[in-house]
Length: 326
Image (cartoon, rainbow, N blue to C red; front, side):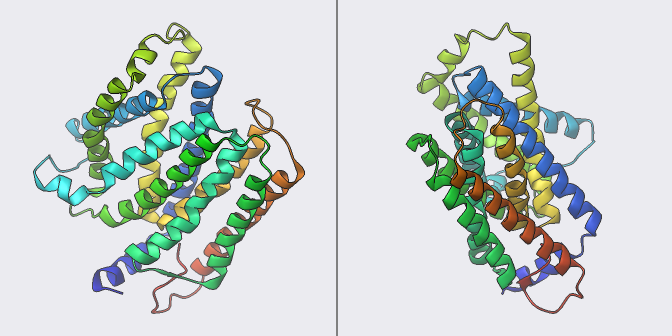
């Protein structure tokens, strides 16, 4: 493990339990709400372009952070030529994560979307080992693969299989894992800080994404969309844009106080409640016993991970780089 990595571990461990817990709860709540709102906008109202919804969320992020900076509520560095180099490859991962997530939400039932999102966890674990040089205890690894076992069982019995939806959600898993790990790596308060990472991610990608949406005809479909005069739709569209900002902020905050893996597991536990709600709302879930069993195995693995993490936080810290403080 490098000297830099050795310095990062004690710094992460130094955060008191309350901010770690509250940041995880904040992330879980934002993630829970935005999936439900996005599902309503994209499926119930049949909004034609997940990409344009993503552009709305990016524009909202830029506006809120820039106005906050002007009013000296927050601080992040002004633009200079070094910022793209410092940030790369985060903007590409950010927009890939954003668009693939919105697209997969529109293509899959809520329960299957949440099950397949579990594959973010082993990908995050692997990338933290490779990129951040972390190591994990056997109990943590077993908990992670219990979640994956449940996901395999649930996905294998999916009666509403959608290849396009599966492809986008698995791409979303890859982008989410890489985005979480690289965010943890890039979030140096002496350089960009968490607000700078958020602002410049959205700033660099909003125009290219707008150009892509124009060239694919998405913008034309959106301008012809029939529900723009529907107050309920408009409220939920704007709510989705605001929640998009809150989700990005809460993800960065949770990754700051915890590990990227813990952020992924918080998301997985949150997803189970969405899966249960999705059985009752949305109208696109087909019940099967194996699918239901798989969902519950996922939940058991997530709760086991949480138990091990909380237990290990209460142990005296040893001079080792085994990840017991996530």
